[in-house]
Length: 211
Image (cartoon, rainbow, N blue to C red; front, top):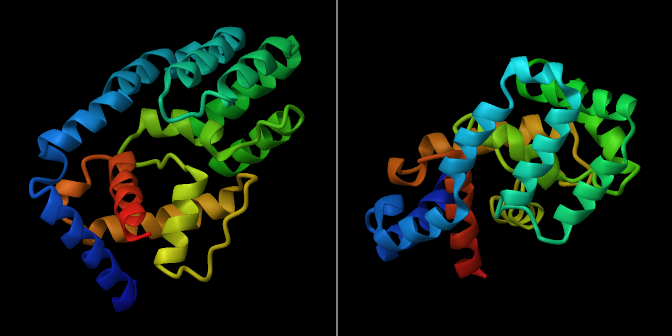
């Protein structure tokens, strides 16, 4: 990572830590984090989406809707649309959705994202927030929840020219963006890297203040 990007990160970090010296241990930040219920939902996802449970595609699809519906990270507008879409799917489509989700969590992310996009495009729901939520909850220090506005602001602020955000999810973008965020995270103060959504949350809050 080039020096200018590290300097930009350190500028945001200094500003943030001036307001919240303990980082995510600051009481005000802890209160915000608590509202997102990430820890609780993460535990639930680990229970609902074990490898064994994928032998029941219909249950997997219902659990997918259940978590999306509960998550404060997904917009209220998308939740009923997803529920209606899953309810309208036939057995074959639910089976394909379940297989793609299994691949996303445990096997081949590239094929999984392509399959999920293909299925969800029909319902106009092939969105980053819907596709990246469950992987993030399952592995909060490995995977990233992709929020469009935050992502665009991060790429703009850090002047990442080799990455072009597009609304339709793709494995290529996710792989490169994840690599970029991981390299940023490795240079950040440890108090700001409690989990991946926390880290991007710090960037989102800081960039909002910048603007």
